[in-house]
Amino acid sequence: MKRALLCGVTYRDKTYSLKGTVNDVKRMKVLLMQRFGYRRDCIRILTEETGSESDFSPTKKNIQESLKWLVEGSESGDSLVFYFSGHGLRQPDFNDDEKDGFDETICPVDFMQEGMILDNEINSTIVRPLKKGITLHAIVDACHSGTVLDLEDIWIDNKPPSKADKSTSGGLAICLSACGDDEMASDTSAFTGKDMTGAMTFILIHVVENVPEITYGSLLDQMHEVIEQVNYKRCLTVPCLRILLGHRKIENPMLSSSQEFPVYSKKFLL
Image 1: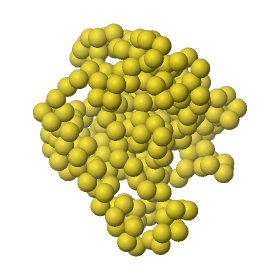
Image 2: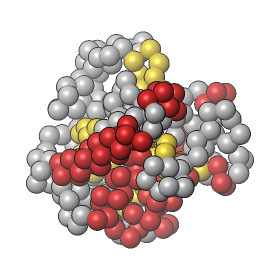
Image 3: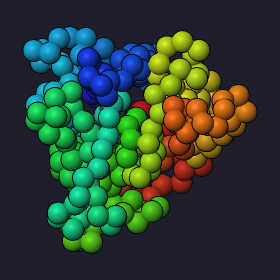
């Protein structure tokens, strides 16, 4: 079974609204269906295009219930994808399970009223239940998203000081994040010339569509190369003051995993 949850939050009519998140979800849906063989009826999409009262609006309640739906009934051999494009924030950690002292969060459309969804909850809902043979990919195009799955990452040693168990139940969880925990993601038209899109989402899809059978290591390398070229080009063409005030530098995406694997030989498969 292949199952995917795609969330794009625009925060319509708010001062902190985003313009590219629905475009991101549409591009990700096409990638999953055309490149990786996901069926449309196995992809759940939450965006504000469905209306604020819809079960498919990206409210906190709907995202929480959809995260449970994503892993419910999954068995060995299944592939799951959680994709989120929207705002991410941080807040002080009161459980002593964050090495940097902050919990990372994703922001539903109603987060100002209902609150954010913390990395602790995301971990307990879609990481901890993963049984042997199940693979989860989380692709999070949001600020402060580096450790948003709270994986006990073997590459950067993200084990909680509290010794809390954040591991899977034998399955594999892999996360591609737009930036580090202390960094900001970018919503930009730099790649399309017109439509806004999340920088990481656009580059990820572009590389995967154009390089057949790419490995995780090569994918990250090529994404970093594109970002370096774009940042350099913008530095040459945009006055420094505008860079500081309105043209955020595109950060390098991060890869984390619940288990160690050879990144330059394992093929990127969703």
